[in-house]
Length: 204
Image 1 (cartoon, rainbow, N blue to C red):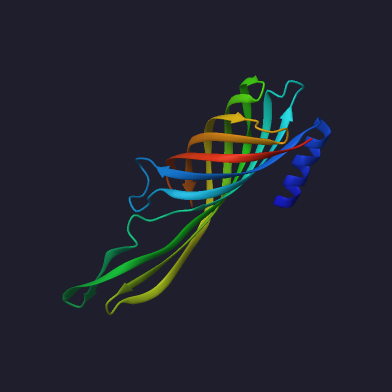
Image 2 (image 1 turned 60 degrees about the vertical axis):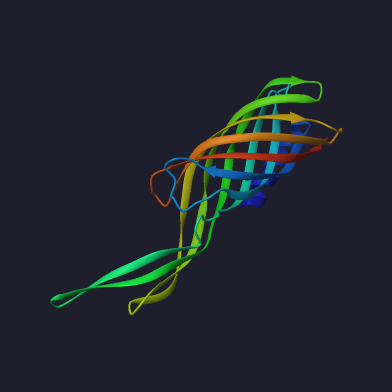
């Protein structure tokens, strides 16, 4: 499916005269309202652009990202309460986090409000969809000892601002930041902020 999307994007780009493709590396910072166990996370995003119009002020943008979340604590205490007839017993244990990853598709665009010589400044927005997957191990004395996997869909949006510098005829460097929200598996949307840098190749 993604191969078809990118092929369509660059087919449109070839008709407009120039398409661009690049790779972006970024770090995501959880803001207030995120789960307390997430720290700064790191990801990589494959990007595709198609300029729109003769002055190329507008750009259609497609991104496919892999985000690997990091945990503040690899292990946290856990417990279970068992009611047996007339007694209540509390068993102690530990939960160990293994991974939490997101696969994100971003569909949107940019507006270059400054585009002069080799320099540009832009704002933009994306609609986000994708999937997440996680795995952790729960071990509670006399109660459980199991690996638990979870997965689901993500939905959200993000707003963007950045600058770009075309250092060579076919190479551009971009620095940009995003603010947005994503919902995981139907839960309340989490606010996040990210900072990243990309290298873009022009197909002229």
